[in-house]
Image (tube, rainbow, N blue to C red; front, top):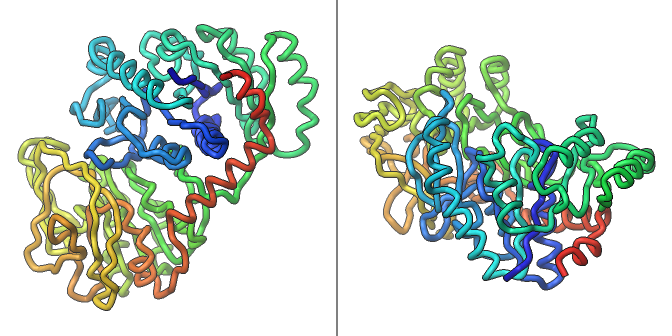
Length: 478
């Protein structure tokens, strides 16, 4: 059986995902067969795998860092919030439908624990090291009995635990001491990392000594704040604002935006973008391209566009000749009508889209999750090069007057307007396609997203390696 490292945090957003990603790359560089794991993740940012399984994109990224193929065992439970205190639940890579809090707690007691335990055991049998990520904090004593990502792993798998605290928020030492006081199995915590330090780290010396003397737990290092790494975020907290602002591209930010990782290439390529909501829609007049990303609830996001005046602003931008692309839910919003006869995402009925593409959509209970190879038909002079992306959506599109945007191994896909200025596709990752993105921006992009991502992961690993006692971590698992 392989060793298990559990990276927990004093709070959400403390930097657990970042540390896990870095450790996966560092251990892989050292020759270990290493795999990531997160028992339960809450995020609208997901990805489809080769077998059609759906997992959080954060664990996909960590698998890339570990240089292994991502699998459903790496994220056995994924919650995708839908509003009204309900979430779509993905178990073992497949959707179990939408559950409220009471139903989810019953689900935890009857099914989830077994799947989580089986998944972690399978990974531990297949890899030398599993780097597991906690969720939130292990000291959230109000939900300890339902805490799969921290407490369940701590009590059933005896991991080597590392605690991460965010110094930038303030109160880091109190958070560390409080977490160790309230969590179960605090003796499993072998080391502490302080994250996002700005300024002179030596100023932390007295606090570090006091915590070590009081708890007997060593500090492994202090990680500096860094701003120049284009590492994809885990969930909406990482996308509350632009990580690289640019005026050429505007991304419509709706309340139920999902698969926000579609904009990651804009950061990786150094282009940037600006989020647009109901408060700054005037900026649409100045941009070259408008992106409507995915949506967890297309119908509520359509209401938002209309109530805030964004619909009118988008239509005005179209009349000014701006290019507009809708991805997945954004594709549906650009269409003529969206029907949901079975009430999959609404109370049923037919809804009017923005009418910018002559395409109708019909929801069904069947969820499509698959990877896809495609050739873009835009521009028409584009070389016939196959790119890879993935689909995650309910229902299907019916083109009536528009030509397809892409050719996939499964046939035509997406739609493009007759003037080649409005585009719609269900393919996530479409902006990784440098040929198509270059066409949208009238520019040549001399880069490759996969290579760019690898460079940033390596730089992250270097930062962590230079500031964290990796030798101590190796001693813990030896």
